[in-house]
Length: 167
Image (cartoon, rainbow, N blue to C red; front, top):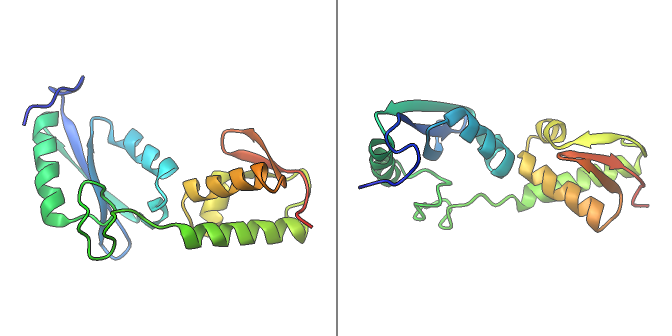
């Protein structure tokens, strides 16, 4: 397979992400795996399930991509969009519906009972760690509470201020 990419001739990493039971959640390739993992942390609803990762380097992007294709077929990562035949999730995606519901209910209750009073600044990272869900899930609910319920106001990336209770 020929790869046309600006880093095609540079060493490229194949990384794997596992949950606490050793289940392979995802695998991918990147020239800059630390940065790529940060992107996953910010964008993937399954990120909170990641307990460990491995990184193996290949001589170039073509070698890494060939290995990725073989590994995806053999190892069947749970949330990899290129492999959609998982017995656990035929669509290859993590359904964060229950997580979103829990975050919304928890935040609304804390705003209404005064635990998060008017003026409190909330961050997606801190709330996601506290509630044990992905940052992207919290971000969706913050956006909802700001745009529809008007209980939060967006300050800047990942930060919202409580402006009123839902009562």
